[in-house]
Amino acid sequence: MTTRLDLSVRRHEGASVIAIAGELDKLSSPRLRDVMVTELDDGSCHLVLDVTRLRFCDSTGLWTMLEFQRRAGAAGGCLRLAGVHGVLKRILTITGLAGAFSLDPDVPASLRAASSLARATKPPAVSPSASPSVSPSASSAPSAPSAPSAPDAKPPSGTG
Image (tube, rainbow, N blue to C red):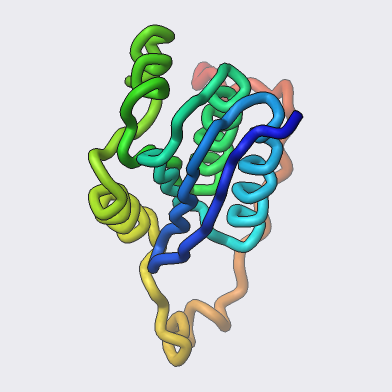
């Protein structure tokens, strides 16, 4: 028995949109997992799952989404769900996990949020011609040796 699941990936600046159509269950979840692993490995840490055409999702599908929400976050990104409705909306509500995910009404809203997060977490660009300035006196001055410290040493009591 095979489960009908169609997956497609579109890359946008700052995010990958993975469109899911069909049924996400124990048999098909490994395919979604493989796609998300590939996207993260390729450096796309902001993932948007377009679930507008998802007809069914079981607990395995939900666990897959939770796993990659954690993995994307650990990579400095996010996992957003776009177009949640029907069975997935009901499962998220019943399990209390609706608040665990970033839910957006559609893909453009998810992309705006992911792009905003990408800009906020991106380190500032450093000009390749910029080099740290060192004053000549600081670089040529010898430093005084530091006294070794004993791990069990106590500060002087001042009574002498």
